[in-house]
Length: 190
Image (cartoon, rainbow, N blue to C red; front, side):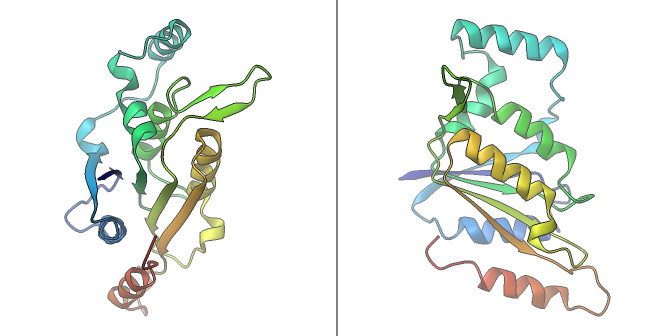
């Protein structure tokens, strides 16, 4: 059995179209044990100077037992990762950014070579960036996806895929039909 790490950055969880789409992706992995991390409930704080300096010092010592590395360990050990985040201001919400700060810890998610190049340490072969947009924004204009593609390259995750639905808040559009099309378009064997 593999592991699937679902990072839930959806604020309105009971009505979230993004979370609905992310769970449809997760259903394609019935043989995986799903661990869902609900970012809103965690109340994670941005990394401040004290935390960054402590984490850097622990990393230098090779001591990754501190809780500051817990999220990075989960991120690095998952077989499949799903980032469920709504489209906000051309990218993602602040919870998603803070998660990324914790997940991308040096010494856990990646390390540096002798020449300073990042070498990925993540086990995942795929990361799905799942989002929904109210307007007609194409995937190519989603800066959040571009940022996560870069994170995947650094962390050694070979496939970073986007699953999205756009135009959901346009009054003349049928949002439910758009969601149905997005769910139906999820590849059969991811």
